[in-house]
Length: 468
Image (cartoon, rainbow, N blue to C red; front, side, top):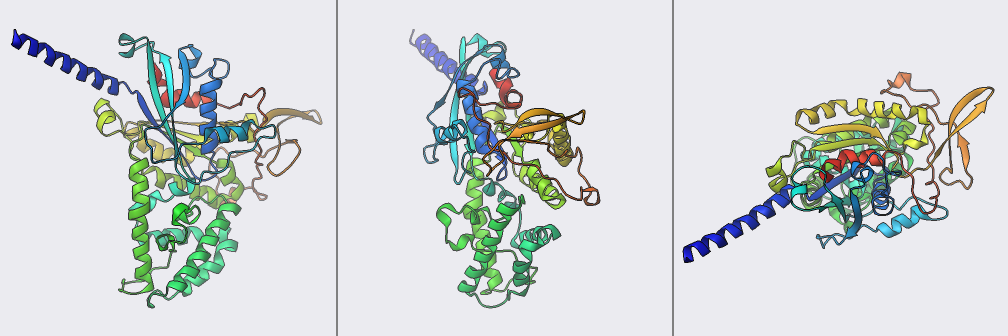
């Protein structure tokens, strides 16, 4: 009798353990990497995603998101995050910017933020429907400064390799008017002299000033170290006070060069590595937002460097086919969406050009991802619309224009944007006058409702399979 009772208890425990394992394997938690360099629109995307799922989740607004179209999404709400040492994404303040009478873009992110959404839905297939009528999936998103993302490739570099890479980027003729004065000083810098903290500090400040100038005057992505631009609690610390130098030869103890190498290695170990391990090693899905229009405005050098920076950064993530065991113990990113954001700033008939251009920029890397078993797609989106399509007749010819309020302007205008290329142009084929795409404020929300382009396609690709 006692043996029978013991056996029954053991079976109950095994059943409970098996049920917990099944629940974990049912993908009830999704960690989504919203990736992009500074200015790509990460904060606006996250804000729009929360707004649409919590208050605008209907089949008219999100017709290509299956769980909404099929009326299976019961509700969605923000829930307290489990990670208590990271600030919560300030959704209310960001949404207030977009929903104001004169809307503005939310401020750029200057620290790590996170939030978790609980999506309650009815299942229509698979194992879930046999356990319960209703199910809940938790979607975790992280917002961070895009400048910090660009630091990740530094983990795979020595100081010498990083210096050569950075100096090559800064030596491009397109940036010479900004970079040449400092490059001349770096070439004259005595690397083998004894450590002079004042000299290192002065040159670090000049290098930091150059990075800030490039950030505001260009769309150059490769601005390293990122903490020079947004230092947080590291402001003034020697660990971020370093700069690239030409090749030097042997490292000699006690020299300026050795001191910079020490700072570089300390930055990697104490700043980048913890950031990488804590926030970039356990994602399930990835969205890569790209500001192609800004790169085109800057010129061919910036477009090429954007391509290189994307490839280097993507190489730092853990991609691959993710089965049940991987999801439980060693998650990998098994779906990646590359999205050219802010597509409504070009004519509606030309938006496909951006998709083709982005695909060409990343086709080699996409091929590598697909070979590793990753599902990949490329599209154009606008997570928050800033323009409306407007057709204008000019001398009997229909022109596809956009209507919106340009940044730093007070009036709405009708604008005929340039035609973006559908492939990577050779510098010799670049338009003589370049490209002049305008940036616009968000469109005013009608009755508190934001508009988007293909946000539903984005959600369907990234998490649609988790909500069946």
